[in-house]
Image (cartoon, rainbow, N blue to C red; front, side, top):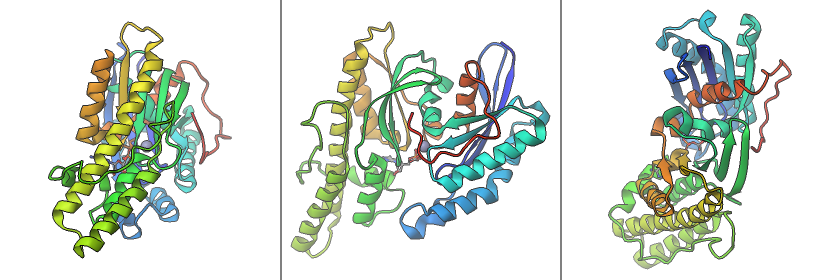
Length: 347
Ligand code: KG4
Ligand code: ZN
């Protein structure tokens, strides 16, 4: 193996990111830089990511992010061996911005271009941060995604199940909005839940009665809305304790659903009888302390090792895109200038 330096770009949602990774002769990969510029404040007034605003903002700052990533890595374009970019899935305007920027760099330098699936980036991250062997089980839980993946190789994934409606992060964000908490909702709901009781409100555990690993979070959100309205009618407002109880009840329901579905996914995966079975989590929702603790316990009971990458690598970033390209470079050819931005691109 020779040393390899790769620039990665990510712009599929509301973070613009660029990163430089180097894989040494010893096969160890180092993150030389990982720049992430969040657009949260641009979308704050709209209660969600506005695609057109996102696309314009990505196009405006991508080149600065690249410049910053290269300079933090103390690296120049001639030091690079490849350009990697998220080619989907995601908001089309943002993905196009990233792909065009990467094509421009590749055209100007002659460097090979790799279009990477954003979900593959998340799913491969545990191998960047920890000593994890294929195949491993991955639960990807964020604002946009929720699925169980069997990761068999850099470009080989099987989907064992996932949400049939909202992602849990999306539900956390909506619940925060319903209860007048700040965005992003996940951390606010988790904080508020600490002083609440999970048993005050009986909230549903959707799809637990159905076999398999599919999940649903939209009905849970509707149940919470009803519970809130009943409380508001009863108290003429939302007392602090009621708000805390609603948060605790909602979080406990999400924990129960994720835990039970993870048990089922682990059961299928453990049939492979591996020497070291591993459950990995990634995505912003994996930052939740209650969820993390529960999943760790579920893995322990099943005899699986539990791996959660550090938060900065769990949420959207470009290091995971550069790393995924590095993993895939050994087995696939670069993309041509016909590389397309794909808003939908299931693994
Ligand atoms: O992975 P991410 O940064 O972006 C994508 O969705 O791709 O995840 C962001 C999501 C948001 O919905 C946010 O509310 C949620 O992750 N989140 C949390 C927590 N921290 C972030 N959800 C629950 N508990 C948390 N502590
Ligand atoms: Zn993501």
